[in-house]
Image 1 (tube, rainbow, N blue to C red):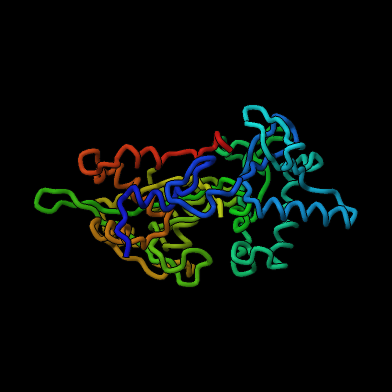
Image 2: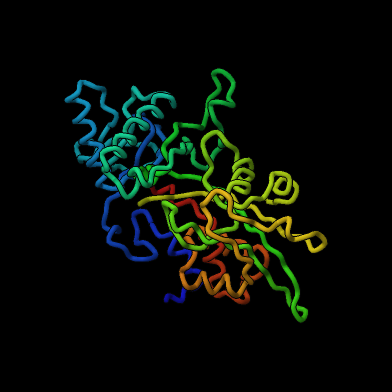
Amino acid sequence: MPDLSFLDVINVCDNTRIHQPSPISSIYDAELLVPLYLSESLDSPVIGLLRPIIVEKLALENQRSRELGLQQMWALNVEIATYTPRRNRPLGPSVSFQDWLDTHDKRTAAMAELCERWRDTLLFEDVCGPKKWRAEPYPIYINPFGIHDHPNDAAPGQALNFAFELERSACALFGVITYGVHMSIYEEFEVNGKKDLKVWTPTRSRTKQTFPGLLDNTVAGGIPSGMSMFESMVKECMEEASIPDHVVRKTSKGWLQPEVEYVYDISIPSDVDPKIFEPRPLDGEVESFELLIYDKVVQNMRAGLFKPNCALVLVDLFVRLGYITPENEPDYLSIVTRLHGTFDFERW
């Protein structure tokens, strides 16, 4: 059984570096990751990163389109003679949508057709095959750190940061940045004048498509296209943990898979019935909930029993509540910096 430090826990999740060695060496370090651009324009933003095997499949997609008399989806500039200069990016291989895919509706439809065909042909069965398919569209943005807007909420003619929608399970194939909401429900108390902590900790269902049986945050889920961060949190609280809308609204504060997590907390007040905040499985995604003391949570974390990104959310909670400090954690500065990184996005 591993004995992970808090920095090791971060390395397990934040495990990829662009054009430099990764924190944990991997056979994939030698792969040349190719940036995916939104369009063929020299000013086009980068929206993803592609492994070589995906670039090969996209070339086959173009060949298929030619044979069927269809428009090709992809501009592939992957040979030295075809390298295209991009503003503020080093000269090198690149892939982009062809210029005819110039609206979010066109890109969404084209990507849906491609991903559904890959699903049905079992091309990447372990990623987006029938058993992994989520049937949940995720939003992809022009600026992944910009506004989370959506066509349904836009005025006519309004410029949007929204670029297109992509099936959740396929996002890792295209290295696009995705978004999630994570909530910790906890209570603090004192023992012999020293503060301590308990956190409601679920065990993921053994039938989950991803990370079955691992420990998780109290409530967590992806942010679907067209839904705000907080409304996603409210939805997940009811679906996963049977915590009703009014409780959350009144008390909360708060392959290549880069993901931004929006973090919320519920601190159980000492002067109310704690049963109000007790999570219970509802939709089958959680096997059980247990209120674990801080030392037990850390023990499970060091043993590698948590879903990797959920362990990071808990490390962040422990920093914010003062359980991990510069005085008791020698890697404190590295931990805090790594928790709030940007995926080496400037190197994409």
